[in-house]
Image 1 (tube, rainbow, N blue to C red):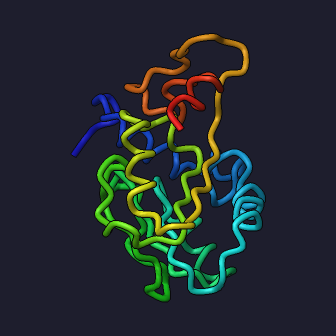
Image 2: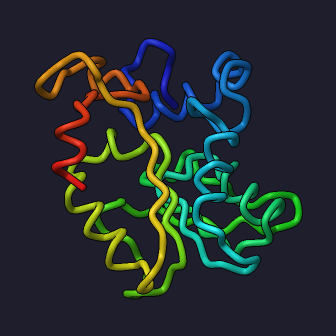
Image 3: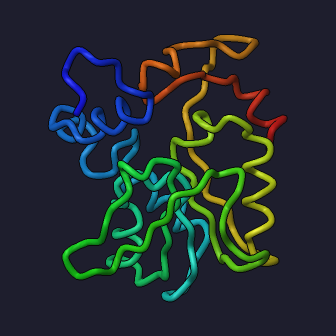
Length: 182
């Protein structure tokens, strides 16, 4: 058992942050800036029919997976690198989530109608590889809903908060760098 003085791994620190009442008071269940309002905006641009298969990459606690299932009746799957954050199941047993990296999705080629990636690409070690994976799992005509934070003022990659600190943003990339990745 870890004592409060033992150093936590970045994933443990991030899990603790996401489980904190203080963060949830600010962000609500979505645990990210923009919350479900931003999710809803992305979904409205895509026009998915009920039953669409959507993978939420970086699903964290699974709040968006539940939202996709309950509000829109989509077949949603959550993927997150942290087994600590993944939902075991909601009380109805409906949330499906797996441990995997964004760069190596455990899904068949062309198997998804949509990929949801909210406030996650900035945390991925190989963002270009992750975008290639998103493209691989999307069916022809499928949609990528991508939202993230970026630094509007800098010309280069700016370390903002150390990744080892377990904070939500390890590196803020600039818009031109993000556009180059995409």
